[in-house]
Image (cartoon, rainbow, N blue to C red; front, side, top):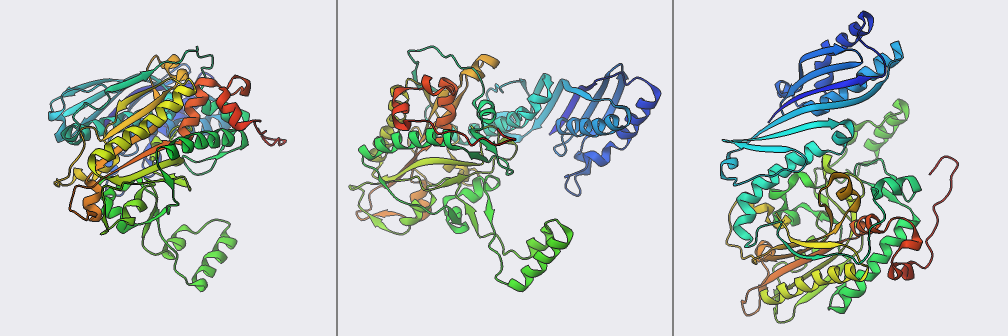
Length: 514
């Protein structure tokens, strides 16, 4: 990949004088040290470089290029921080904002020649031979912090894989909307629910990326959705189980997750049971007043688990090498704990997090019954949204997670015509601000065909076909979608929700927060 950025840093005062210019040029001259942080050894040539700059009035114009490491849009933010610190301290000059006038990204991939079309959100895109060109214009720092660059690149990668993989399986093009529901009321709330929830003290950021502390008001709303969904799925035959959330690597291997999405999981390394070695670790930490990470690494065994990224993993392990009767489908649901996925730079707000809660339905049986059950679980989400008068649509999903492992090899696996449906709640604030239809995925309804049956060697006693399916209801996302459409005033909420909650609990009042 190649990144070419033309932008500027705008300061609070004129910087076009000899003394200030000299300070700026000194930082620019030594910028390679700043840009090389975090770059793997041997990849230094791919780090950002300033190829041109110009100072005029209050503005520093920059042309920065890079490869895939320490990319140009990250570099300009690092540079802004260094300049703000230096000029603020020595000259009382602050940084007003960062503006990216034009940003061109080139992505090369052999699969591009097979790509029929490409429409990347929030930028212009072109396909030239074996390159995809992304062109962003008039970006500000807030846009960069929204990770639109990373998401655009991820979008391109997913499109390439989808073209190569999902299109072979799915008989209906991914993204096709198969059902829509418009509410009978007009929206009155047009703010980002994450921003409002933070201001009100309904949530507070946790130090870990993509993690939040959910306070009593928003927790009560989440539990209301959980109860409403559980009531409905019990009616269609699901019974509750408790599934482990610490999953051995060998289970993930059989699911093909280690081949398809190895970078999307949290790996767990148990400690060595050697108290005397940990005494050295503790003593060094006490003396240095910092965590001796390298010493801690030496005290850990090799990774042997992951934190559950799909929630349904133990269900397939339960039936490994077992013989079932497909005439008697088995239908379980689990709501016993958090699900974990490493989103990296993609984590944002409350709608895309690394740690989230779901009600997960999993079932096994004959193919036609497995598909019927999937349709019923999808109907559960649709019915709840319509009862609450929430705008939603259902679309054919792209890249179901269990297809990931097929990127490395082909197996004789059976799949349904549509492996995945996604139900999305509309986000009025985003639609109004960006004039772009956008929703948060609250229900993912999947049929796996024989993918997991093959991996876990599950059989029917008459050697008939066995399929599996799963549907996840993202509780944290249902909350985001609901608050986006109803706002935070309890009196404005739907009677069904108000009846469930009865009285909204308060946020603890501190001197300093919220």
